[in-house]
Length: 334
Image (cartoon, rainbow, N blue to C red; front, top):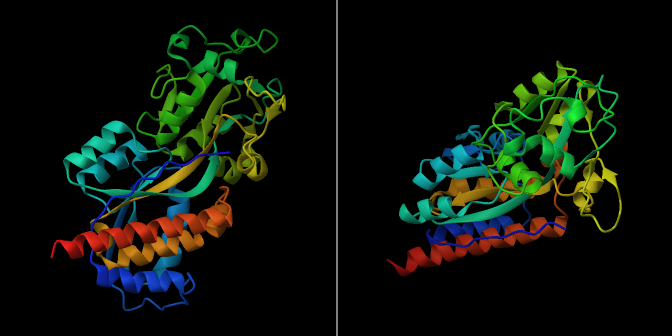
């Protein structure tokens, strides 16, 4: 199963949090328009993978709190983290955990934060639907294709498996600012941010979908939701984790295989990070509570795999503890 590493830091006002925690404890979702008197703005940026979930939540929240402006950008996890650790945004969408350099940057700017898990994803390996030779692919073969030494060397399909055609191999994948790129390279190549460079790269998964769906000799990877949304013009490839001692063989990503952990090593948790200074604003507190109350349903609607209900409850408790600690810290400084 997937493990989560969560971080707690502090800052806020106790009075504000007591009201927001009462809201969370008394039932989660607000009725329509209940927060119509709430005002302010929330700035979010980061992962293109997490974007569909956050945008769906933001759209629903705009109905609940029409006077709160929620802006959701897409600059990749790395790009979003740069903004977040400078204090430019309130929340960052992340398809990987914050790394040590980013933590140091946040600390240097006196920014503390909370990491909250919101859904699961299965990175999906895809080819053109006319590709009739790839029935499955192993982790070792993916590494052979994507490792740095493959650049200029592994350029044809039959170099991966001899029975595959003697045709050019065209690669599409996440850009280097993307958390998807970091996760894929660590899981497949064995080192984060390490791969060949001669491939079509983009932080916009729709560009990758367009590329693979129009190229019979393409192979690409991106988040499961983008495959689900476009599965009529893409073919997902089962992945065989050769280190799997259970011998389950090649596995396709799905709600079931990602949730039960059998789709390895490309299953992963998705996160949002919340800036503690932003929690001093009631619109941010209400939004995060709303997010955690609705992430399960909305993540599934946009093609991702929801956490178990008990896990969402844990995330809500974490956020409440974070917010309370933030408020106590601020109160003690008064």
